[in-house]
Image (tube, rainbow over all chains, first blue to last red):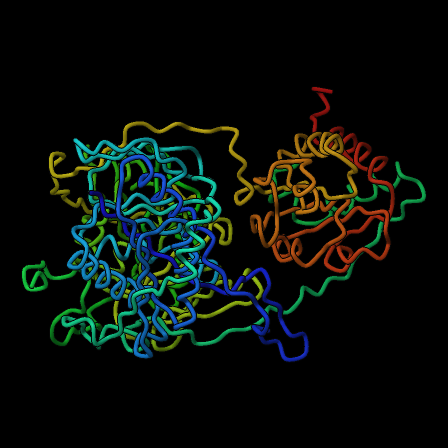
Length: 277
Length: 354
């Protein structure tokens, strides 16, 4: 049977994060934790493959104990197992350290449930916004990667081949790759399903598997957490709101207003930059 | 058990002490398709030229593809001192494995202290693989770059849906890597007299060893590309319905610009979500942005406030959009926009053609 791993992350819904205007700091209180939006599209595609071909779907995440809730949500949708990799020593990881831990977790999942044929990730997370962890995992496991997939065209189990459409700035690329392969999902890939009633019932009782640093015999502690992360955030700041002296164009006479605006725009460097005659 | 049989994981730290001072210069990885370079690559060379001069170090470019020697030449005209040029049929289409293999070889041989590439789909795919392989730190999607006295790359990027900026460093390893957003920096004027060195790089993978195959590429000329637009004409709730966008299309056509929308307009189904500018849509920074019938909710403003010039047209004099607009017209957009289109049309069309 196929074994598919889906990597997810529980993130604060960044759309709900506000900046305190007095202190210029982030207000995190009351911000709901959600499963990273794009990851659910990766899970949906894995579940579709499970529906069609039969597969074991293992969902993994690295995060605090509260991330168990995110795994239960995935189980309610139809995932077979959820693994939480959680330890204080993992905290503060950048994308390099994160891909190391997730790659180790996938190797351990292979030892436990059999070789992995496909890995799905979201194209990026809402809080980190980098899109680097997927390629990082593929690279560490020496697997081919198909990023920014907008359509899963076909899977040929006999030939061990997949064909997908990758979304690019100027068009779409059809690519064929061989299993095992790592795929990162766009939101246009599919529409994630709602939890089924049996799924909800199972999730209500489900207790995710938790692995800590002690569960990995081959873990190199110098490569995890803050210590294993080469990038350092040296400062963060809220950009000053743009100071603009708005010039108002008198609109009492609309014909004159249009000409007036045109003349003002022509008086800037815009005609030169935009090639206006 | 199986753990012992496993191959060693890729991207673990180099063994022993490495003399990082051997790493010198900045390398820009040039992106191309079908022999045409992406504008972001030349924009990056422009900014990297400034940084290289500050570091008193060479500016290198890496050009990969099939029949792309003209791009290697162009890279010099856009500011590179040295161009590494890998030309092979296996490199015709971008694929992670052969491209990252060439990149790694060039980086390990010529040792740049900084490696930059565009934060495009391809750039992000490639950078993530290379940074893991080396291994080194990688900053995604930077919008500001600088170097300090210790030769550290200060790569700044938006965080938390554009609400903050964060400066990110990598002190531990070289090269320091970043992907950079398109449209942020300006390319230098092309100088065909500029001279530089082009060094051929051998690509050593055989097609039989590359299992991933690009079957076809379908160009989409109708793809909404807000990120690269120089002029954007955006509309919101004030347009009153999908028909209002016709006026915007007319103005955009005259200016060679692109139509966009606020979340209010896309949520109401007046126009596709692909056109949405803002926190849950696309972040843009065109030279000129028209906000027409858009009140200026924070969700919209964070996605367009970095436009060079903003023109706001709204009937409500208290609409917050006026606070960030360079030019404001308080009035009826249905009257003003067609007149503005006409005025531009007359001004931009050569006298003879009228």
